[in-house]
Length: 158
Length: 363
Image (cartoon, rainbow over all chains, first blue to last red):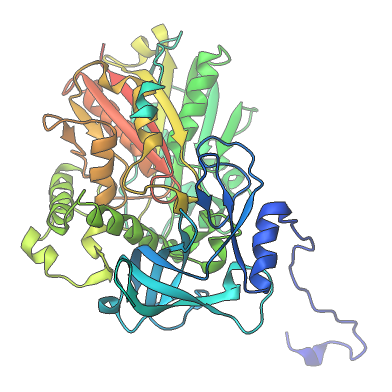
């Protein structure tokens, strides 16, 4: 049925399916996201003293509530990675890239993020990376647009 | 390992057995049947094999995923395959059917049912499965990156390679052996494999994983009948008694995990009593080749155990069903008299986050 068959004064409204609510991220995840807006990265001290980054509200082993936020660096080391040869539109980088676990300086656990690289030959476990911040930051993990290789490797002098 | 020493195996008060198993033939894309049409004949076969009318089933429990079906409460539609009138006692898990079986087993143990029908199914073909599976992840730190399931598995594979716990050759061998074993599995999607040398010459799908390291994307379903005590003995000549069953979970924050081990699988295996006697056969739910090796180690399976004679998930991996199929494959081998004691494993989530282990015995 074409529009021609409809009266000109028909009322119209767009329909957007949406979930009109927000989640509160709480004192730990919220602190991490707030920090990202300011280009500051924080972890949290776990029950065994290790610094967990990104921070979690409860210890992953003992389930004890955690509260001591600890600032960590925006450089780190790749602890494992895989290559994404054909990124999907929703993923953080349009070009082929690495998906990597990154242990930020000062942290003892790893953060998942993408690493820009020319090819899988350029990436290695132990390679050093640095956060490349998004120009506009909204308080989410994609405030780090991607990590870039510094050209250094853990354990070697720059 | 600490996980194993903290375990406690206790024999359950009621004897419960798998008495019937039926599966679809798993395919890359079943385009001529919707979910109801896919699972209905499978359920019918499972009931007919033991000559049971649906009125004799006290409890029905299913496993499926709205994310695969693309609509909310999709399992309600699939109840048409069972017939929910007159009213039946029914439940559903948004998980692999192995967990639906666990719920039914608990229901029977509690005395609220003597018999149960469990079924699960998944049609992954309408969507982009590795992409859809990223929705299983933590919504704050992981989901916004939309990491696909194959790339995530590659991260685990790399850790195992770096740690010397697997080699590319061993990965290819696992793929080869699994798919060659599937030649005798009429329900398998992939039957037979190119030689190991040819597999290793292929390009990477997601470095360090090649295509052969990954389970196929499958459509399919499975149905199982459970019965307690004398009813099980009436319905089957040789019921596959569930002598131990447990499921455990590791942190969803896998950046804080050592991905080369699966403490939850080891704990579930200890609680299920895997090590208490000789294991004849094991069916492991390992969608990626390194996970196969990781689970063999976590469950402490020796070289004398026949592992994945069905071909495992590497030969057919219908989401939400591939775990329950592992229980079914072990049960079938016990019911046929081929083996006396077997171990079935199911996993849920990425990187072997959650694991269920059951011990089945013929006597």
